[in-house]
Amino acid sequence: MDRFIIEGGAKLHGKVKISGAKNSALPIIAAALLTDKKVVLENIPDLVDVRTMIELVKHLGSEVEFSHNTLKMHTPKIKRIDAPYDIVRKMRASYYVLGSLLARERRAKVSLPGGCAIGPRPIDMHIRGLETLGTNIEIKDGFVHAQTHFLKGQEVNLQGPKGTSVGATINVMLAATHAKGDTIISPAACEPEVVDVADFLNKIGCTISGHGTHTIVVKGKCTPASVHHRIIPDRIEAGTFAVAAAITRSKIELTHCQPEHLTGVLDKLEEIGSSIDKSNDKVVVKGIRNMHATNIFVAPYPGFPTDMQAQFMALLSVVPGTSTIKETIFENRFMQAVELMRMGANITIEGDTAVIKGIRKLSAAHLMASDLRASVALVLAGLVAKGQTTVSRIYHLDRGYERFEMKLRKLGARIERQCE
Ligand code: UD1
Image (cartoon, rainbow, N blue to C red):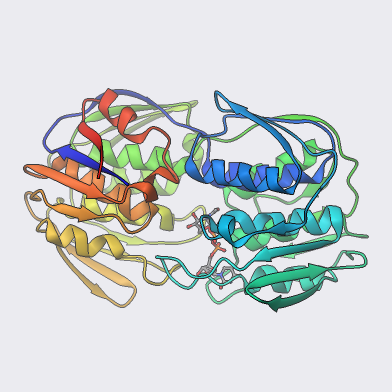
């Protein structure tokens, strides 16, 4: 297992190239199972999760070549219809093959993902949506066994306890491409990654409209075609580097990003005092010494993303005044707070709200990463702590950030990877 050693206090400067979005790449690789024609995907980030998805589609019968962020995939025939536990336990997003396998083979056997560090994360809405399209689903021996004689286009209601679901919207959209008749998904998630998947599906010959709104219509016909598709930039990686600029009071230029996907995050950074300069595919973020406290309310896109609240908690720990973060999407997603408190941060958790009283300086500590976004928050805190911070279990971070420490080092951070 690897860990990071970070020497706090270095100013950052320069440009950082934002990679392709993990949360687009994973479902799009699963969606590529829908066509027997060749698919070329560009801007695929080289991440542990992407490698896991490649392992899964190879298991199902795809021929895959992956180098220099380009993935060539060809699935003339699906050879297996199961997603084994050993792969699914490494990555929840494996459940995306459920929709694709049902569409192409009318059956699938996918291991249940189980809980994870950020809460129970059920898949009942995926199951309900696929049942509405005419799938018989049985949960047995830790697997979802799904089969259908034919999928029938329907109105699919994806209202869940916390609103709609990104994953269920995509899974239902994948299955509905091969249904008889039209499917209307409502309320649908309108995250940019959902839009990217729909754009990809349209390119391979499916007919989807309404993506980017809360009502998606999938015409139940798909004439598979070969396709080149470029994955959108990762808005969470971009947001993380934006926070790196703010917390270190430095100036960083984010290149190859899509500023309109970053509105919720950049508006918040501007509100607390950072300066933001946006142009086509670039954003310059400049942190200043005198930032001020704020209140963050996590919400679905275009609101403030749950995947950015941990990084903001690190930042607000060193911003004068009292800030709050209300997490409305996942339970138990303040895992980073306890570790930040070990660095001296003044944080109290009251139900779904964290109250953060900014202090002048964090102090270095030995820290343990617990999930993807919590890990990166600890690294950000380490960048400004006094002394040498160690962040262990960074395999969590490697799931979602491509060459993270190299990108930070290029900006001037003092960070090293060590084998524990
Ligand atoms: C995706 C993202 C994740 C992001 C999240 C919210 C991927 C691979 N992951 O996760 O990074 O944090 O969107 O933007 O794209 N829920 C149910 N039943 C279900 C499905 C979801 O109750 O069947 C609940 C969840 O527990 C959560 C809420 O709905 O409280 C939203 O979850 P969802 O949008 O499904 O998140 P993911 O797709 O898993």
